Length: 231
Image (cartoon, rainbow, N blue to C red; front, side, top):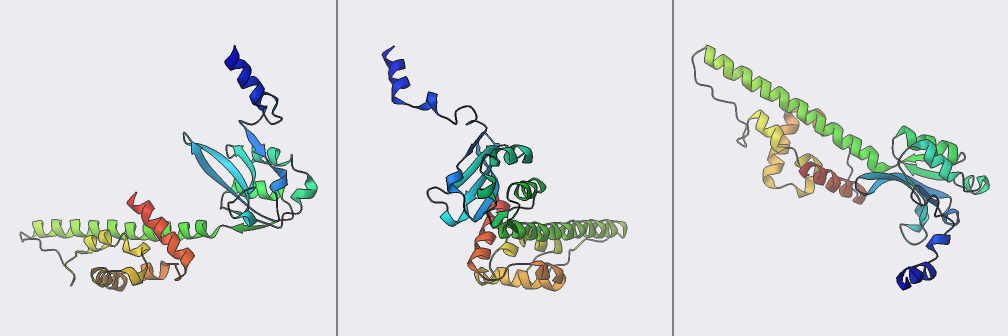
């Protein structure tokens, strides 16, 4: 009895004004500002949440504007409607990803805001596209090697694969170039430099497809791509 009494009197949880919907959404209108960001994240057990933050707070105190369980646009819009229309119309810019639901949320909830696609998402698409190109070329090289092996058998001769100056066959070259494509060229080893030169001579479009200028943000994204590849 004493324990129950203490928990009831020392905490305002039972009388918390947000209690009825706290497991579904929480909104903090006082934290809104002209520059926001919206994204989805997994907090626990793989469940996704949509989070709206004030970018001018740089992840510090009072940066959270809203957190909503799930990614359904209608649910997020309904939660954000608890912020006054006047305050929502003061939002000038919202950074978001490429999903249709995010665009809908921003368009409806912040009608006067300019939508800015997060640079990391654009670079992630480019990173994935280069990877897809390399994989396609590797499958072509594997098929080419299989055909050469079969032809050698039919002709009754020993199959000797063509090797480039670094000792790689074409399919080995493509497999071993997996990580150097997402690594700054000034950090390549001498062996990687030689491999990259051969790779780009054979597949110049791979070099042209690399979208990364040399700045800190792109370097950070390269590291993110590399972690994803190793994972």
